[in-house]
Image (spheres, rainbow, N blue to C red):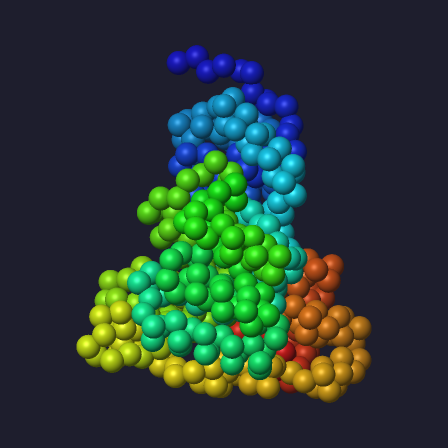
Length: 379
């Protein structure tokens, strides 16, 4: 069969190519990351069909044709134009700016769209709050009381949820009232808000937090997007708190994902006769979630007591390492919290050998902890 030879295509900018990659049918986040690792950039993926075929063993003609369909780049160019016109921030999965905790997840989106305050997703205290859409007075009271109390202990806390009815919007509202930053993870593009009645609070969130999605403008919400959205809510945070959930509630999916990502999962218990607490009680009974009764339990369990390290402790840490590279690492962890070794190296511009040797020294001397998944944090 004759294959047209008008490829190699002209080079497009990296943003357009990143968007095109995520819009290619049959390419999910895992495949996208593998392709980026093999080719080095999204531009390289779309630059030359023959080079892509040569470098990606076993790639099908169907996928190659999908990559080089003219309408794909046209679509991506339109989205890129909208992103620039509306001052949307974009985060690439292999970029040091990408949310550190989410980047640890194998199925993390290869591209994120964000509108709001910068650097919230690198904070040291990020808590996802999820639950039923049919929240009860008990659930609202728990949400309000816990978030208010957490705000007093942790003014840098970021509350993450999904802007849905019920517990989600309650969590965002409580965070805003308490003066906390909050991130709403959406199951659609940033050019729309669902449900529509939450447009006002969404505007408030942009000013005191941010709206985050993996979906480009023009994407409508559907049930599959909501399930996929849950993995971002779970992966973005240090812990997930389930306020209320029925025995088959969607928030149980988020709790399961949090466990799969080796994150802490917490749940508020309820009476055995309460249908909207059945899911939480089930999580607790099966040891899939830790039972918490208030903010104090959460602070103690996550070792977030006293708002983390005091200013005095931070000064002590800053003075400790005499090795300049060690001092850089400690300062970076103080400012940004737990971080993957690759991100540390990229941010500090240290070679792999320098980084490994210095981290070994810091761990041996008691300054840092090595955590599963290549994560490092201050001891």
